[in-house]
Image (tube, rainbow over all chains, first blue to last red; front, side, top):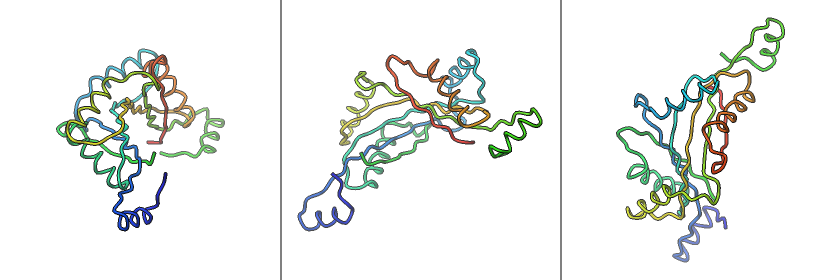
Length: 102
Length: 102
């Protein structure tokens, strides 16, 4: 069920009941520029051997996390923390997070 | 350089010169519904051990392919063929392709 932000604030203030919304946060983890990506290079060469013409190929990991949160900002913050603590290695990875309501 | 579709058609017809545009095709490869994903399950459990509260996690591979093509449709078609022939395994994977001009 969808509650508008005002309705949520009202319920939260007047009933002490925290309304949670279901979100899917998509975390994309990619190698930083300059970090070698032998898997992508191998994939590119395999495509070329199959006769495909391409100029470059980068690979990335994508995690779709289903979670309940008070707001999209809250979901974004928690997914970013998941990326920093586990999903991405900050030495070699960049990540971005997108949040959609489920 | 960007050429509109009409300009491209004109050049192609009147000069025999094929104008190519640079595109990036993003191919997302995910497991079909019902296929077990032990890596995602392990990642979910690791996040839970770190104290995160989440309801589900799915992982996917993302390939960003740089290629030159006559049109976005042409780029889409070639990237789809790459997915079918190499990037995805049709027995266990679904894929989708998004094309953007570079």
